[in-house]
Amino acid sequence: MDKEWDTLQAIFALPALANQRQAIMAYVDPFRRSVNWPDLDAAAASWSHGERVLVRLAQTLWSATDLLALDELRVLDPDTAQQVLTIIQRCYWG
Image 1 (cartoon, helix red, strand yellow):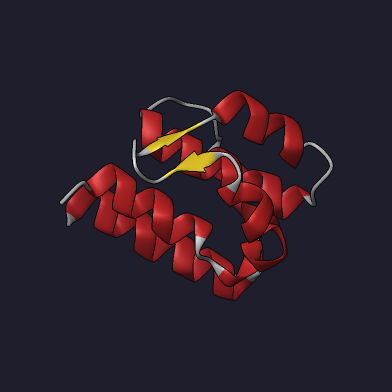
Image 2 (cartoon, rainbow, N blue to C red; image 1 turned 60 degrees about the vertical axis):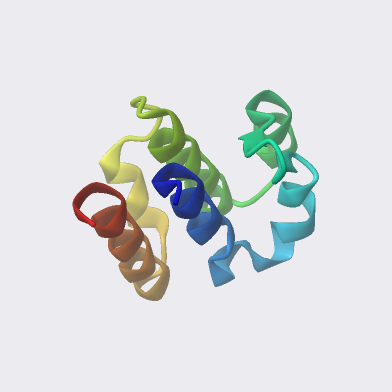
C-alpha cells in the first residue's frame, strides 16, 4: 500500500473537487503513480480559491513540502474542512 498515493486519491475524490475531477485526472498517471504538477497547477489557476487550495494540499502531502499554509484551509466549507482533517490525520498518524 502506498500511503502518499492513497492520500492523493482521497483528496482528489473530495466532493469539493467534483467539478474538476476530469481535468485533474488528465494530469494523473495511475500506472506510474505520478502527477504532472506543473501542468495541473497551470490548469488550476482559473479554478476557485478552494479548489486551488485542495490541489496545493494534495501536492504538499505528496511531496512533503511547505506549499500550503495551514491558514489557507479557512476558505474551505466546514464539511470539506472536516474531510481534509481526516485525510491529514490518516496521512500522518495512520
